[in-house]
Length: 445
Image (cartoon, rainbow, N blue to C red; front, side, top):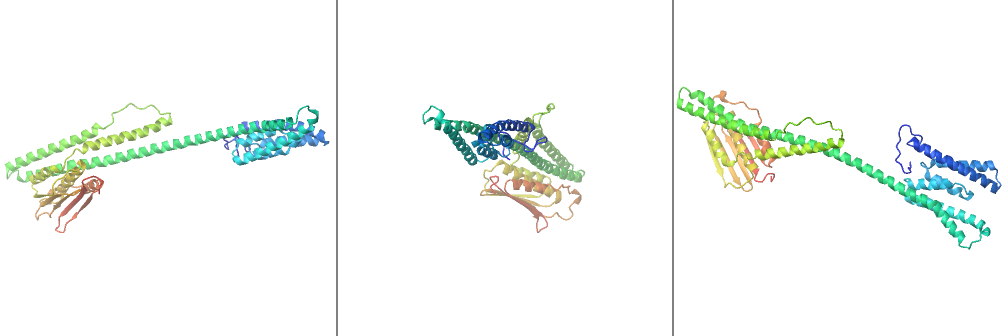
């Protein structure tokens, strides 16, 4: 279906091919005026041609009434106007038909061809009429072609130009409307993606906080439990050693509390301040704009939290970590290979946490077993390994500590996030080995 200057939708209350009743009333009114005009002109044509007056009027009314089809079949309306032009009828039919054709979605080449046919037909008819009346006119030979060309252009030109302008303007408005709808859909999609990214960032931070809490608490508490068991065993036999173990338990408890306070302080520092309840959002665009801002705020808080957490331990503190395990009664051998080279803070912290978790697992699952810690500085990477033998016979199984099974998972996630390789499993000798290789530049692996 073609349109003439309006976007038509099949809505409830529409009549036939009209989308609105107002359009139908307007076209029917034009058809009535055109039928009246063509009826009068048909009456005059019948008198001049010697035809029955009734037939001339009837044909004129039917021809003029075809203007009601201008929105549905504009080409047919123009062709009918061209066909009846020799009878000198259909002035309104020609003007409105050409306008409707030029403003419709008919291809431009067809519009130009039909409009050219109308122009030629009008020119021929006017020329013939002027030649019939030339003997009564007192003008030169130039007058007939001048008037024929002027009248034909005046009848077809303005209608076609106005229709082309209205059609181009309508198509421009449709394209702008479609573009606005597309932009609205894109904004909605961006808002949904921003919310998804914010939710993903929150999930990542929850996982990271869980790993940090596990690394901070598990090692200290495990050593405290080991020292408490030793304190219980030697309390009566060796009071001096009991006092020493009690002091170590107190020191480790204070260190654990200090690290917990630092961790909770980081979380509190980025906790959003309570705000008054927001007013109801009535503007859909305003509500959509708030979602990306919330996502940006969550990402900024995550980045700040990550920056503060990365100020944690490093490989230079491995000696102190091993000494703590030795003080708890574990036999630990530390081997460092290669020269330490500069690497990112995140790599050093992850390497430290892997060694810390490996020693913690020895305290938990193999009390009394010997352990060996190896750190190798290689070209472009850092390798670490914590290996322990089997628990000696007669070891107190009641001293074994409970485990949540999250230590190895956390180590694997840390190493994989930096592009490294993590391997853990039992040894042939009945012990357990934890190995990791991390590139010096995160993601280089």
